[in-house]
Amino acid sequence: MRYILLLTTIIIFWGCKNPKKLILEAEINGFHNNETIRLYSDSTYILKRKYEFDSINNKILEGKYRLVDDKLFCFGDFDFNGTIKNNFIESNKEFMKYEIINSQISLKPKIDFKKFPTYTAFTFNKIKGAYHFEENSIPYDLTENDLLKIDSILPHCLNKTKYFEGMKHANNYSKQCIATLNEKGEVQVWVNCACSGIAKNLFKYYTSNTNDGGHCYFKLKVNLNTLECFDVFVNGY
Image (tube, rainbow, N blue to C red; front, side, top):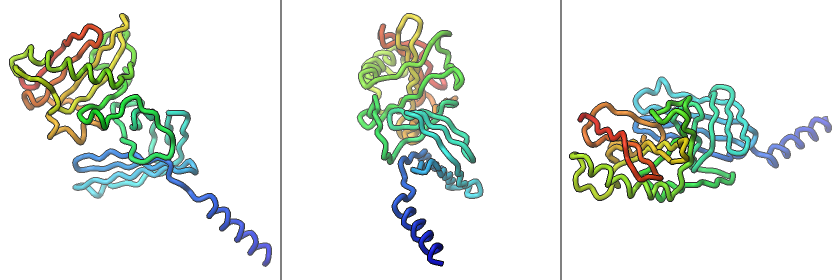
């Protein structure tokens, strides 16, 4: 009896001494849906999916994860592998990412997107989709200086079309960027833009293609070395 009491005391003491701690929390906060993933100190995760108008599809997914440097691998109900970058967890299989809202681990972002609230960036990968870059293009990680350069180029590019004459800046557009390095060592960036009021929430989580909407939606590519723009496409025109 004493042995059982002693063992129970040890288990309770050990459990209190080593509680499961939240080490990272990230989310997709969409218009009518929310996904939250939480990583715990015992290598378990919980992913909650909540739909505002479709509660029958609400789910709680659980399993184990492995975190190696900036690489995250989830096993169990949620099969996922991604990379922690710029305060997001970005999928390695598609253009989708979760925004980190709470972390007990050290994060060293190259870009502080709070300084650039109208921008988001996704990593180029031919598995995800090439977006018509040059054949031998490789991924390039944008910097804050690159975003400033894009800001300065966009008005000049758009003023070349009749739909944006007189535009001095593109601050009222949300902008998605995918950057590559071509064989010449030049940085080429696909920039997808939408009126901020429409796209502000979802644009930072998923790449988006819209078939209409006029000049509220446009996309183009810019070369950050030559400061040229090309493949300018305005929806509906």
